[in-house]
Image (cartoon, rainbow, N blue to C red; front, side, top):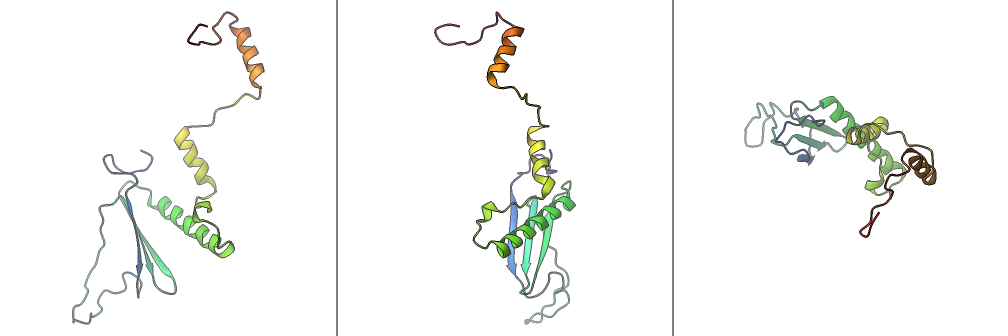
Length: 152
C-alpha cells in the first residue's frame, strides 16, 4: 500500500540501466544518421514499476526515472539524488569504504520507513525485570507464573 505500486505488480522489480552516451538524451532528434536515417521521435517505455536510466555523457550524466502511476515521483527522485550525492561524497572522502556502509537515505527517511514498518514507538518502562515481576505479583498474587511440561 505505502509503495504506490498497484496490487498484483511486484514491488521490488525494477530496472537500472547505465549507458555510455555521446550526447544528452532527447537532443538527438532531427539529426542525420550515417545511413541517411533521421530520428524523428523516440520514447522509452518499460513494464517495470520503476526504471532508472543513467546516461554517462563523459563530462557529466543525465538521470531519467520512469515510474508507474501512483508512485510519488518527487519522493523517488529525491531519494535517488540523495543516494547519488552520498555515494559521491563517500567516494571523494573515503574511497575504500564499502558501498554497503554508505548511508544513502536522507535524515528523516530512515525513521519514517521504520515507523511505517513497525508502527509508532511504544513507551518502555524504565524499571528492571525484578521490579516488573514484583509489580505483577502484587496485581495477581495467585496467578500462574511459569508453565512447564511437568507442572506450574
